[in-house]
Length: 238
Ligand SMILES: Nc1ncnc2c1ncn2[C@@H]1O[C@H](COP(=O)(O)OP(=O)(O)O)[C@@H](O)[C@H]1O
Ligand SMILES: CC(C)(COP(=O)(O)O)[C@@H](O)C(=O)NCCC(=O)O
Ligand SMILES: [K+]
Image (tube, rainbow, N blue to C red; front, top):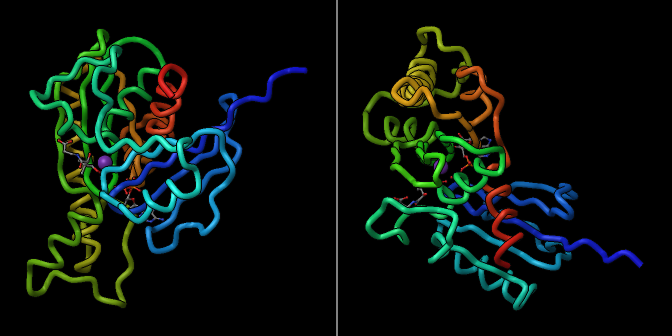
């Protein structure tokens, strides 16, 4: 009788929300995302569960530990001693586990230099060369956070209820449109400036704001990079 393929539940616990995929034999069987206040009461059955968490979340960890016991692998920092990646941080455990996994995920798409953008709560950009040497990166506030920074720290820049968020980059004609278009252009310009400095690096864009950013930069989005990184870890490590 053929052996049943191993099912893995992969959970990407970011600062804004939690995303998950149930995979078996490289296929995505189920997927979802939710705010922490609205997580499923009932997680799917899985042979193995890997969580990448940059956001603390002790309650989630307790619940998943109760549900899955020893099948749970909780990653809050890069795995020490992982041989197929060379850190540049003097303290590698300080590198966000999501950034590390996104780079491992990009590697599953081929060899060569990679420039990995994860447009989430923060927008991160990481460079990794063909020898899997992390060459460093950039961290800036992501779209929502950058907008909130303006709303929270100015008297009159705020989202008026009668204003619609614009998706175009044309100059805004109300406060919300000016902020939205301004912040989008800022993020796009940052990524373009790094791309320009590293022309031999293949660009990958993931994260909650990855779709529009990828479209602007004329590359296909890579929404599953962190899951792909987790899956490649599972193959050798868990
Ligand atoms: N359904 C959604 N809920 C929350 N944010 C979303 C959603 N869809 C897109 N976004 C955008 O994605 C960003 C969060 O991206 P995500 O990759 O989930 O972040 P994180 O991994 O930091 O939790 C938000 O800042 C927001 O601009
Ligand atoms: C930079 C981040 C906040 C990004 O988190 P996210 O936007 O995915 O929620 C996260 O990767 C993190 O907490 N990193 C630790 C600091 C570092 O990477 O240097
Ligand atoms: K991010």
